[in-house]
Image 1 (spheres, rainbow, N blue to C red):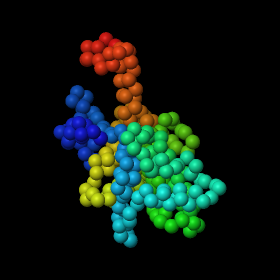
Image 2: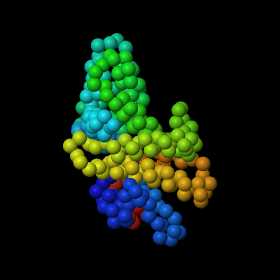
Image 3: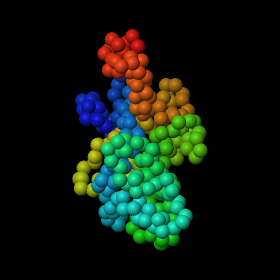
Image 4: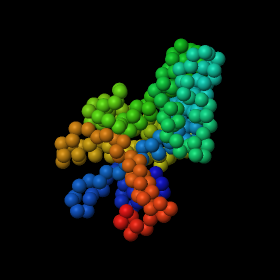
Length: 251
């Protein structure tokens, strides 16, 4: 979601309603996706810094970090904690801490969602509104970050297509009906999520048509593979860790 990438997408007519361009030689679609680990961090940053305003049938509803703050406050009075991994540090992340995907995923985990649901359903805490937020984000990230064909309760995209497309549709609906507090238009990270969901569906259909694939391991679609490769190439040069194109070629 860098300005350089978005400038390139704009010049090629890429948007969340048109997320592919034609390969100039083989006339196949090249599908554009944003980096999912960066997307979930951007969700977290805007959730903590501003909060979300969700349009519902009963009017606008504010969703902010006070939900988790209230949860932690209630649990601090009990010997039993459902969310033992989540602390105040997850709500007060700064500088380099904001680059860590792990603490972001912990904040939006299924465990936190279930804890919010338990306390809200049993009237043990106030202001725990819209407990579905964590669950939608958690399930969406699991689907867009699959490492194996089948892992625990999640499957690679394509193995449970009807349910998985339903989840993508729920995430699309949430993003389109939500505004970052204080903003009137969709933010770039919201457009990135919509574009990535759209591309994943179309990429699967293309690969199934041309190669008869049955599923996609979605972690292979993010930026980590490229970053790891570039790190490896830089390390081959010892102290010369900024190779020219000629250095790159010989390495």
